[in-house]
Image 1 (tube, rainbow over the protein chains, first blue to last red):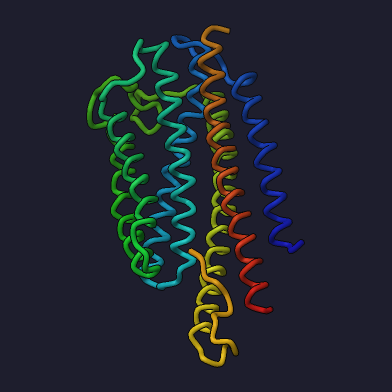
Image 2 (cartoon, rainbow over the protein chains, first blue to last red; image 1 turned 120 degrees about the vertical axis):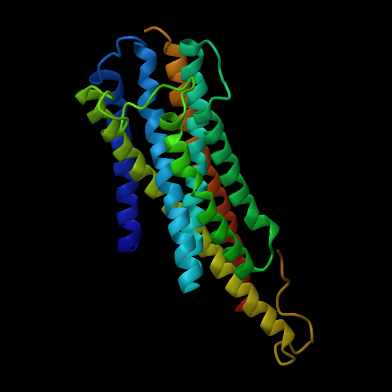
Length: 247
Length: 45
């Protein structure tokens, strides 16, 4: 086993242990919130997932920009991998939000600015992931995806600012929301601890997804090699292609 | 614990999505690895 693989295996185990420790901190160390009580403990996973998705989409935009500058497909693969992980974390946000909202607001969903923009964000990255299936040419696909990934990132700060610009059903920000915004120091520590675990989980998942793109890259190169050998008259004595191409 | 079912549901959703994503990657990876091995074998025959 290579050193790189061993390091990632250690990182995966560490992410699992850190997530377990975060679970303990959420249920046994974080204090009870005065108005919402126990249900507020969803906050740690809901907010951490949202922030992790924001970081993931930043990686998508960065990978896209680097691909457009350097034309190295590995940047597009990294962007796509982060995009898929980010989409998974946004899905967590969109499902845990209503689960938290129902006992507190009495409704699962409302078209409040924050909720609406988060849903738009989810749709935009669903389109980003689907984009790859619509274009056959590899370079065109990567270019299109990169441009779209940069454009879609504009929505991330917009989602962040929605609760600052407009008043809706969603609570006002407790983090970065001005002098009146306060979060209990223990709650803050537990949130940061959970977010750290989730960032590592994101890195592990993205790396694994990236490995899949590397494999697909190798597969494409081999298919090309097989196609070339099939096209060459000297490649096969019988005149039949050496391999049967699929996909 | 009040609203325990909601808290449990939220955490289960999180882990279901994480494991679902992980499973989906592993499945696609196995498929790509099998195809790669087959193609390599055919090319070097």
